[in-house]
Amino acid sequence: MPFLIRGIAVAGLAAIAVAPAGAQVSNQDPGKFVQSLATTGFGVLKGDKTAARGKFRSLLAQHFAVDAVGDRLVRRWKPKVSAAQYAAYKAAFPSFIVGTYADRLHDYADASIKIVRVQNQGSNAAVLTQVTKPGARPVNAIWSLAKVGGGYKVTNLTVGGVNLAVAQEADFNAYVQRNGFDALVAFMKKRG
Image (tube, rainbow, N blue to C red):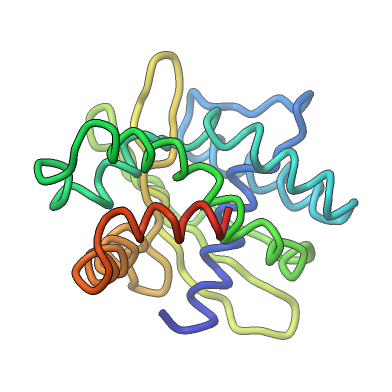
């Protein structure tokens, strides 16, 4: 995936995951949900890297549909692996996300997100945003949201036309084909 697209994806994940524990994130309205995550998330990025990484980890489950995303990425392999292999994958997935993205977050501390349009789709929604980093051209990002319990959770990001879940699923599939499922889990643990 191109570097700029990965960078915007990092920005999106930063906004999702590093909202301060005491921050009030409005998750009843999809546009306000994304905007409040972005506002609080980018505010935290201006602070300490270690603290941001800890908040990323602790709040990932609060605002991101971690289990659903993790399941989607290995749906091809799930019927072919043992319960123990699948449990090891599920345990490694949140740390893999943190390890992959957390250290890159500070490059986007000055970025901003503007809500362009919200499209409600029953209990789901798509929020089109424009991410702007000083000195760079704006990039469109679509946040896919699902209503879970009493509020929204992020299920996917499409950045600059690249569907991140589809791209990560393809990466995982290629890795498993070359190295096996256990090697994927070991790689994820190492990265996390």
